[in-house]
Image 1 (cartoon, rainbow, N blue to C red):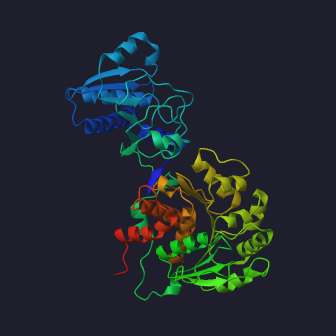
Image 2 (image 1 turned 90 degrees about the horizontal axis):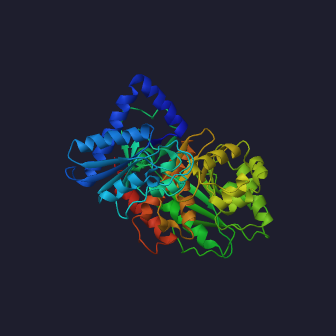
Image 3 (image 1 turned 135 degrees about the horizontal axis):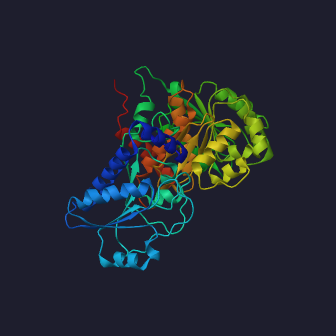
Length: 474
């Protein structure tokens, strides 16, 4: 996992490093890292024309050190202040050359206010130092007219503003520079990567059988069986050995997914106590997913709440299951005392539970909602964030716009259920949910670049999982 530290945490790490290593050494290391990336981007320095926008703080000093490094190697470098566009002599310096690269070292992660960089000709590549100037380090919100970077050299550790909101789009490729500061003991936020799936999703034992990783799904009703089948397919392809689908549509086609055991619960009005049947059916399962396509009638909501309070295996709550939680205070009452439930809201569902619209700082929003409700929360979106009440937070940036398709969230809830079942002896549900979201995103990259639909994703999940080092063989 890649550590992420907040601006405040990084400031504390910097202060300790100033005492142990020394400020000048840190600046020299940072400037060297920026210079090296500039060399890589340009394919060399000799004769190249480079513009460095350098502010007064440490970020600007990093840029000035990089400028010296590049000049020593034959580059022509001009250094200008952040407010260069307001000074005639400085504007003349901007217009004097056709630059090959701009190094943006105007402001760092602690910036607040509004920044308007000098106006530059279109098409000049920009290398940002630590964060594109004008982007807030914690929230990722951009002020003014921030330059679009093709790459950002990040000092020591990622910051939340680089992986969410405007910052995720403006930062380009992220290159983390080792300058001698270790963030691993401080970071409570981590970005998931391939290796985490390999390290945390167990292979099947030689003596494995289907019930060892069985998942029960409570989903679907008349006219909404698609969500249930997508969820079930996601669980199967994520490695659930058995999927039992309890549904409020007794006419479900048994041939739709022949591997799934269908359990008709009757129509909502015919069976007002179907939650007890589900508890019985799920007794041999290792996880339970509830919500997709169940409907939002008061009777259904009541049965869902009973299940959430009475079932004794880990739960994934999505879609209509989240709706059944009701308002903020009602959800707190229903979830009280549970520590084995994962909620998977999108922004609209999260806003209802939180009691306010979800802002751009998705990391903080997920953490706040998880703390309020006392259970792990997976906040779905372009940057998916999973947080638990202890503050451990996982960020997933593998998703693509291809997933902006009806039903993809139903597949995700099934994958989470399948992964929980595979790790039945583990209580770290937030990590498992984050791994599922990561695989969901990575799998989508194997599919069609345009026109990917939810029913494509489960097969791609199995394909992607088969390409990494997981194996049934011992």
